Length: 321
Image (cartoon, rainbow, N blue to C red; front, side):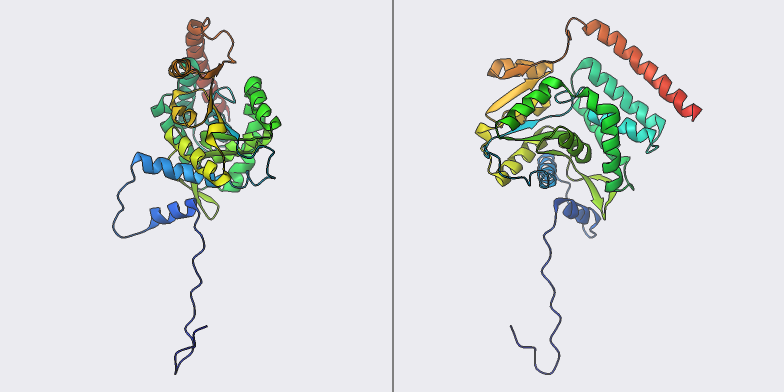
């Protein structure tokens, strides 16, 4: 140890800075003063979202080493593991608990109707719906949302899980492989779904929070498209996974970066673009929807009518309350 300088007491030592988590770093940077930083490009935002999602999966992956430690499976959630959009069901449950207004939930209902009828994710709709939903939780605590996510899963999501997809996930577990969800939905609801299905863990969109309270901003970007591939790459490096031995499952062509990353991709309930890509590449295809093509015209009419009826019912319920 160095001796104190002569003629005065030893100067107090500054402890080394603690390791900074991605969420904390993002929050600090967003609050920092001085020259305004150059906004990150899409690739940078995707990388930050992926790193944050992989870091958030750390607790879920802290299990005993499985019999097959270098192989794993990654499942998209919306229309792959469960029917419809998980963020819609979460938003509706939060609306019932007066987190936000009827006007906001009706906008989400329209995007959900579009998703169900057309069967294709519109990236603009996905971005607007999910980013807006995350902004609604600003000022609420992480503990509060985690508790409500458990309730909302039981109310609106448990019965929407596709049995065929769940069986495929169980096959990987039975082989001694780990299974993660990879979704654009908030990490809090993704973790609930993973726990309820007995999976290893989940990676999802990470909402920034400071001292356990949400700021209404995201860490990086949504975990969507290329960001999912970034998250899986980061997790694979940390867990020593061999991606050539890993599997990935999705319904959307937006997840081609993830599917192309692994040695065993599978299209589940695929949209038209993904079905064509899977056919061209010789990938597995699994479709658990019933008579979808034969009922296309009926779905368009019925879905539009259902959206209108749902909007009227929601408005009436709010007026009664």
